[in-house]
Image 1 (cartoon, rainbow, N blue to C red):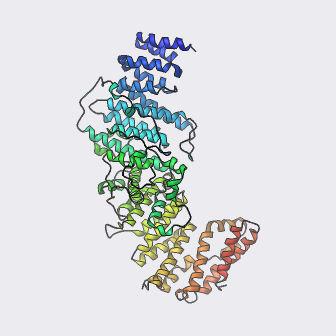
Image 2: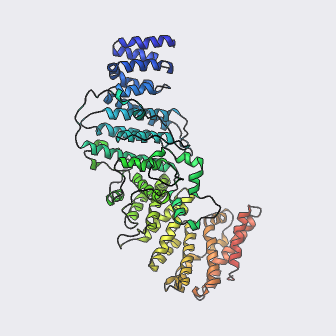
Image 3: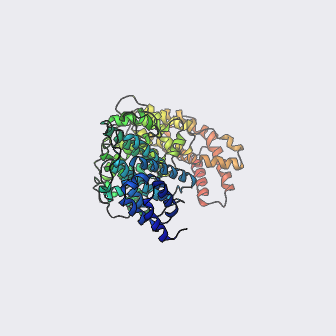
Amino acid sequence: MPELAESIRAIKEGAKEDRFTYLTILQYHVTSPEVLPTLNEVLDQDAELTQEIGWDLVQMLLGIEGSETCLETVARLGNPREVVIKLMEALEGLTVGWNEVIVDVDEPGVVPDSKIPGKFITLLGMLAILHRRIETKYPSRFLGPSLVKVFEAYQPTPEMTASVINLVYSLSGRKRPPLPTRKSSVHVANPDQDGDASKNAPDPEAEQEDPKEEAMERKLLQSFVTCILQRYVNAHDMLWSPRLLEVYNPKKIVPGRKTMTEAFRQDEGLQQRDGVVGQLVVSFRIRYLVICIKTNLTKALLRDLNLDKCPKEFVTSIFGGPLLTDPLAAFDDFSSADDIHFSPGGAVCLIAYWIFSKDVFGSDSPQPEMHIFPDHALMLARFLGSEAQAEITANPGIADALLAIGLGLEHRNLVKEVEAMNLMVYHHNLTLISAFHPDIQVRNAATSFAGSLLHAEPDDQIRLDILEDLLENCMFAALKACAVTWLKEEIITARQESLPNQFASPEVVERLQYVLFPDMQSLNETVGSDLVDFWTQNQLFLLQVANFAYFLFAGYRELVPAGMGAAVGQRFVEPVVAAAERLQEAYRGAPDDDQMQFGILVDRLRSLGLQ
């Protein structure tokens, strides 16, 4: 290793040599942070030199701590078209780097290679400067590939997301206002805004821009933002739909229990996970505003990009346009702004945020021009596709966003625009979120929404068909238990309001008795692990049915068809009670909760007197 003094002298004097020789000198001597001030002085004072060798310095400097100033000088004085190509190569290297390390999914901000986010932030700062310097007939041909490489290298950490927002602000021609001081804010380097733009060298190959390019660039940035938004929301539990339920149904909040809305307002960990760049949510006027990355992407930033409205055409494009998981990937084929599409998942998150921020924070977000039927139903069906479980598991944030949209539309009484609608299919899709979403709060919100829509359907035949379909065909005990609860609520409402519908007559129990009280006599021969497995899979449904049976036979006896009690006792009650008592004995000494569940089931069924 050369001495520091020797390296400093070589860097200064070597600039007199030819460019190839000087690059060789730099490769040998530029290996530590101590020489970087000298190199930056040389580059800053000799713009012609920097223009010629700048693109060769990107990879050389990127791995050296403290090289940001030198790289900023390269971005301001180097040939912008050449340097931007090297930046794209460097971003591609970061993408490979992410794939070589394991990202902590529980704490996305913590990664084994801590240098990757820093390099990403530095490269995006350079990109912001370079793209504002490039003057070409078709700037979108540089912007499109750059945004693709940024998206491929991006991971949804707070710092990297803040850097992306800096980039979009710069490329949209806006400057970000000063950041407020708050724990949840994330500050990252932003040389395009904070540096001296007067030092930017002109593009040596400048051309007059094609008039169509402005629309192309704007649409590229819009598409890019929706892609980033989708990835970020999928990586962080926003819990939009459960929080909306708290706002819409304050009477259901348990006194003394902290709500999710309060948790997001008060908990420092949630604020740190969600919050960044608070000045972008200027329209929020509620004093306990939680400033979050999604807010920043979907309010002021998107207003700058002319994406602050939600017309019918925008909504229709989500379920009527091409199904693209990466809309930027085909940038080579873009010939006009109409060829560029938004990320469908990101667009869904935009609409969800607009609804959420207006109802929770009181913002002036745009009103989506849509209804549950047909718009949201088509949107939900397209998202779930033929592999609902895989889609919900892979995109939990979009599932939550879709649910939030549905809740918001129902709250606004925007249920149907046309008479023709298929509630059963839509209800089924909601129950899929109830079954497969990884977060129990979102599952509960989906269940609540499904129940609310069911009860709101004016046609009692449709309501009964949906309940029968769930009880007969659903493989999830929790959802079947919900169907039993909804049936009970329908029967109670029919009596209390003296409704002359099917739920007020014995025909409804006659029709459903074999899916409510199926033949369980095979349990008499089920033992050991098979019996334990049966209980594990079906306990929620069995307990709810036992409660429903008590409700029916003790309080609504007039709805029980003649002779049904004895039949239910023989095929359902007797074998289930016997199986529960065997399990009770087998689980003796087990946790009290298990014993209590067995006891409730046995006592409830025995009290019917049907054995």
